[in-house]
Length: 94
Image (cartoon, rainbow, N blue to C red; front, side, top):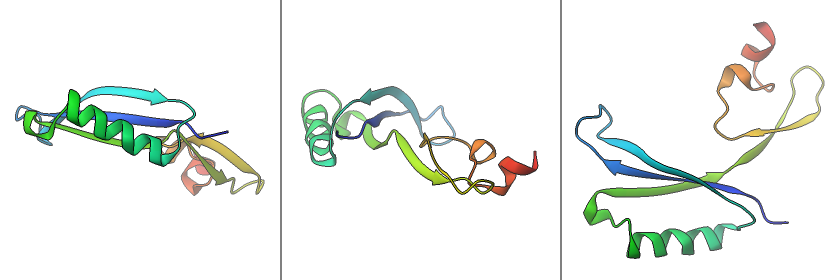
């Protein structure tokens, strides 16, 4: 089974401190990295070009970490904050 990926599309926006804002977030299921690169190229060509101020990036939706307390492998979302990650000391000291 192929992994899921989360795609983030950003739009240039000078009103934001970072200079861009999150425009769309989408989870694409059962796609490998090569398929994701093709998807990004298509979207950039047809709808969200860099000349219009868009930027597209993608990351795997889930990652596997090892729990500090039990040593078991746990699958968590990639964008999980450190305080909720069982592989960090911060998680176990709160």
